[in-house]
Image (cartoon, rainbow, N blue to C red):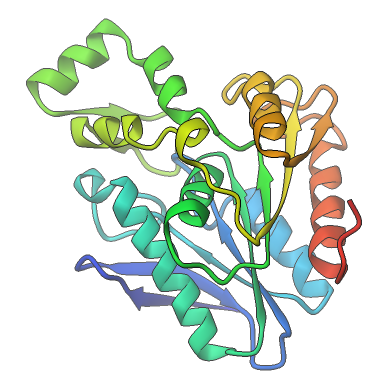
Length: 254
């Protein structure tokens, strides 16, 4: 396992934790949620569990998150997609024969689904934990009159809900969201999808996950009592065990 920075497409480096080698036949790209980072408990736990199975992983920080050298001005949907392209291209260049897949949480899952719909991709499988499939709707609900005023007068607002670092959300990012409605734009691909979601998720509603699952025919596993962070006893263990089966099994088990 080693830390490194990959040169991105938009003038900044992408901090990564590389945990794969030339002997890995499978590599999973792990992406985090809003305000989180590549060092999140979920990212670390999934990386460790997959490594034990001989599956390589790489974790990275989105712009303005974790150890990213840029601030919220660079936190735009297209930049996040470009960074995923860059990380995937890097993995493919290092281990060209390895099967690439994705594990993503919340905002990362939202980005992954846009990525699968709009960009050339190599991923065979994608495991989506508490996917924020209606992120535009979530932001609309959480935009108070005060936040609206800040966005209109200074062009940004600062969100800090015990995040790894305070996150600057720009008016441009909010406008981006309105152009990326997954229920209108998602296009199924050859990538096999699996969703897992807590039925007590207070951030990304289970109702939205159910609608997405039904509309696009995606398998959804509901975890009784689990919140957005999967802190309910036993919930994260279920995520880890399901991920191990999903990525390790050649033909899928669900």
